[in-house]
Length: 299
Image (cartoon, helix red, strand yellow):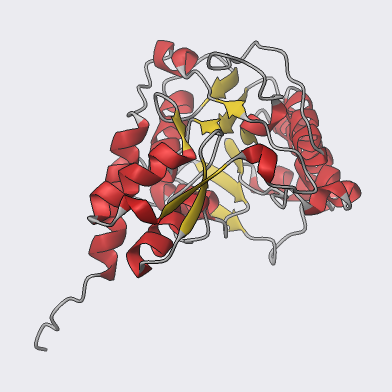
């Protein structure tokens, strides 16, 4: 029996990283021998340690799911944001170049200014409004130090093992009968973790052209309309959704208002992403099934 190909997953404790590891270990989907590293296992800002683990593992694939995601805190803690989202990524890319590994990294819609009137394409000009967005954009640029690299921009990520996303907040609020504030004028193309994982695997397994891809559900929605979709799936009263305008909310970091992303390049590479309505419906059904009490099976 031949040895399994080796993969490293940085940020393996997060919602996306844990799902990637699970997918790689699935016997029915082409297994990898996975080195799964959480933040407790390795500090990705220790660039020498990062280079060492990539070299010593001799992995053919390196997937970086680690990220500094506290958008507002990054405004006052820019050094930490850039250390994780940019300089650590550069160290990974250089090590992947040396080891001839495929490098997969995830970015964000926050690299755009939100002033477009139609979905952003990969080649559209980036103009981040925040320190977080700036750190992620620099990370994208540094990823190119690995010749065989894929940058997958995700947006409003939901799903996975944790229930801490904005979608989960809406589900929990509606399910409990509480009022749920949602933006009526912020437009996004959300990313469902399960779909992102499948798209990731397809890209490098099919040998797609390296570069940047928008890995988001097809279509675009306001958070208010997304909330209405959740309410319909739950059978909840959509009047619990309290419409809020972006201009009426003050946060340390400015958010892009219109940030729909086109996934046409991904589709041209042979990867079709389901529409956002389908992704939300599948996730809400999964959450409801997981919460349903199941009868105990006699021993």
